[in-house]
Image (tube, rainbow, N blue to C red; front, side, top):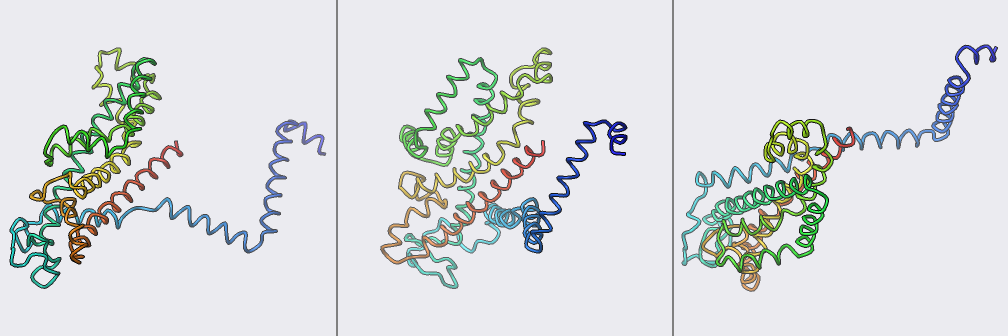
Length: 322
């Protein structure tokens, strides 16, 4: 009987079916031996995988939108002029009139935080736009170039990566002179493009020999036409989380420079310039000068970090599905 069955279905296919059947039986025996705890841990692992897939930074996104909306529309609800110096109430602790207290020049901290948040967010977005533009062009040129030019451009980016970013920012800002919003945004932007450029270069090298890229070049498409219509749609998802993280890094760099005394001057209100008075606040016991600006800064940075991590996980899951 078995010999006739082997002759009908073929010996190779029959042996494959038997081996699969034996593996299924072995798996059933293992699950039976594991008993209750084996099935329990399998269910736990499935729940974890589902939660990971459904994980979305909803809270971080809502908090970030609230902060951004409050900073953009702060004139509608701030109680005092953030630039007005009330010297009679300098370094005043939080009270009914001054919700977050005042700084050493008598300015209302509650109004300053919402007003200065616009400057910090503007610096973060502007610096990120500059760095992303440089990174996309540099990475695409390197990916489409011959091997010797590609190696030369990559060595240049690696040299810049080896230098601490904060040191480059301080050096370039010293060359430009007195810091303002646009100069510090430009300096932070032109020193933070190397990581994105390497990703763009890698993605470009993978798709530069594709049929649609070759056809576009044969039909007379220039570099920017190919970049915008064919290359960018393929690598935009890979660099999106890095772009979001660059916003965080730019805000943090501006705050660090202002805290060190080489960033924005005190007459330009930002979260970083507000922290410039932190050393005096610690000596005088004015804790509110550090707590409230620092809390807004930390919450914003954590929200941006969570959103960037979610974008990174989403890009990774899409690549694994492909």
